Image: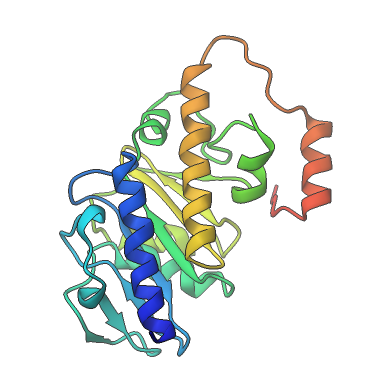
Amino acid sequence: MTPESKLREHICMLAKSMFDRGLTGGSTGNISARTADGGLLVSPTGTSFGRLDPARLSRFNSKGRLVDGDEPTKEMPLHSAFYETRSKTGAVVHLHSCHSVALSMMPDVDPDDFLPPLTPYGLMKLGRVKLLPFFLPGDPEMGKAVRGLAGKRSAVMLANHGPVVAGKDIEAACNAIEELEDTARLAMMTRRLGAKALNDDQIKALVTKFDIEWDQ
């Protein structure tokens, strides 16, 4: 099996795992990964994470031209924006995960710091998460909004829609977006219960020890 064939299988396996655990349903969500030659493999439009076909993934060459497979997701501007602004991006995942979407609708959420610092792993895998406003699905303005962050965030939350996370590879991106949903679930479970989040000194220690991207 070639490296690209293995990557195709891995994308579909991870996508199905997330689908089977209810992290995105129906034909929602999309996923992409960088190939060894600088191209991209992308989930096609209208497909289910539970039933992706490795042979039908959209294949882009290193110049961004579709060369094989089915028509790609309409959210390509989101994916492209992360690849273009964060040079170390090897994969991008977008889900419609319920708890993160619910948290995005809360009126007192900080748009510049969407996730509360409840556990070290949310910080370690995501840094600060930016809450973006609502856009119509497929709107190219979503990509412009990500580009406007100038590569400073590896994760954004689309209000009333879902999270988008970039990682160094497909495993890292999937692990990070699952951590985002877990943290959002904790935030909703403990909302207004006086839960003790990490304090400033604990956050500073984590940022220093694990070299976390933590723009101010």
